[in-house]
Length: 258
Image 1: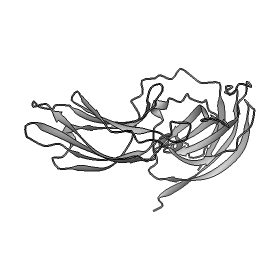
Image 2 (image 1 turned 90 degrees about the vertical axis):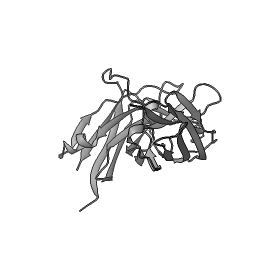
Image 3 (image 1 turned 180 degrees about the vertical axis):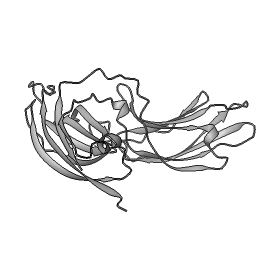
Image 4 (image 1 turned 120 degrees about the horizontal axis):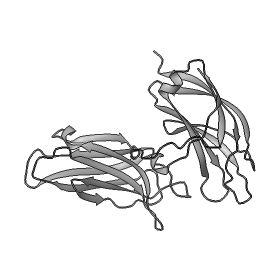
């Protein structure tokens, strides 16, 4: 049985994109991602708010993929490229159109707190009894974190919270693949834990301004076994609290076909 399926994708053009440069124009290009992994990139169209790309790709998608997204960015020669917006299609949406989709799709705004990627390697131990009862969280490493700094890297640290207690690892500078190898211990209350949740968050440390969110993973304590729980866990975004306020003016034209 095949483990992948092919999908033909055409990225044709954009219309009425916002100006991101001081010249009153933009230098737009598109990036195609499958489950946060870049699989294709168009050429950059310089100084245009109505770019034409006209590029076609045949993508090999894993059977269990979750979503396919097209990001429109403004290329900058200095600093980090500006994100103009994105179009995201779920596995279910694509499967529901076996003959393909053809038309204008409105760009959605990009919330950095929702644009997370990568995994974190943890080992957790929650003792059944003992006084004091201490939750032990071994933060080993993370990989493929989102770049948040103009250098294309981040300065990641991890934050562990449970039952009103919070601890943090050290900051690892200029990397998307930090290796902490630190053990953080949190004392649990003596009473029943009920719906207590262990939260592990990864942040990019900034010397100026607020830190940037890189992803999180949560563990309800009643689901953890008495022995060690160890493995790689996918980082997830904060639960969305924003509402869709309707279509934006920027519109890339996408064509999909099985």
